[in-house]
Amino acid sequence: MTGNNHTHHLLELDAFFADRTICRDSFRLLIHFAIRLAAVGHAAEVLAIVERSPEVALFQPLADGLRLHMGHSIEATGQARVLAHQITGKIYDEMAANQGAHSIA
Image (tube, rainbow, N blue to C red):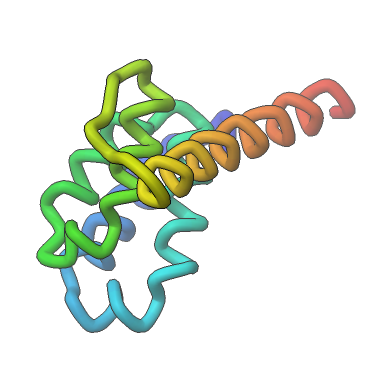
């Protein structure tokens, strides 16, 4: 995804997060693509998309992980905080993988 205009992907993600059925049926896939887009510099846009979702509560750990990634504090405690940190770790892992792909090319 790096090096491309990601507007199309962000618009698709926005449409998917706006649909309750897709949010529930494709939960893991949506998180995967949200993390990938965040890793290529679109964390703020992805967070805005998540916050507009009718299923925002379902994606709270993702939202908190995005906030942590952007350097913001979060209110989450316990397992929710652990999940947020895991999301942040996955974003950084994806960033590292993107960097590795660029250094090989």
